[in-house]
Length: 162
Image (cartoon, rainbow, N blue to C red; front, top):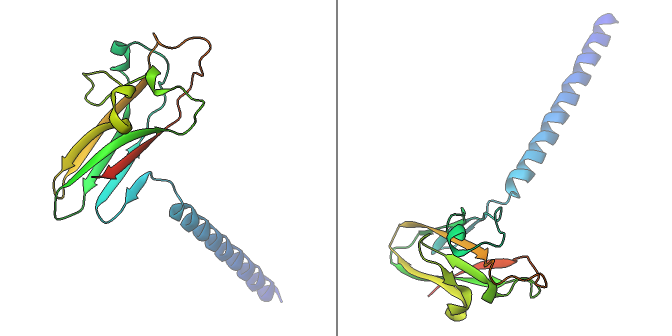
């Protein structure tokens, strides 16, 4: 009788442990499958976004060139060169307008958004099996912001093959 109780307890512990492991495995699989890696893959380009919005406050041209910015990594998976463009779209019409924003691609030159045709801020050609990292810095111009303005930025990066 004692041996049967011992075996029953051990079987109960075994099945509870097995159930726990199965639930943990299912949860891990679901989380791994649905994680947000900010990587977009298609048959032509692989694009990885590393967006840094931690220091988006009004500043002058020189200070804006010193922020970290956002990195966009583009990889050409094709057997031919691809020309692409990067443009910026406002996702909220109530956010700061483009005429109040500066941007820099190279960390040296400062540009105004409204100087860009169709909001295209960068155009380049990427060679076969090559990878490029583009660092984009965007900040509000402290000289153009008044107290009556909406002081937030809500933008999308758009990458198109040309």
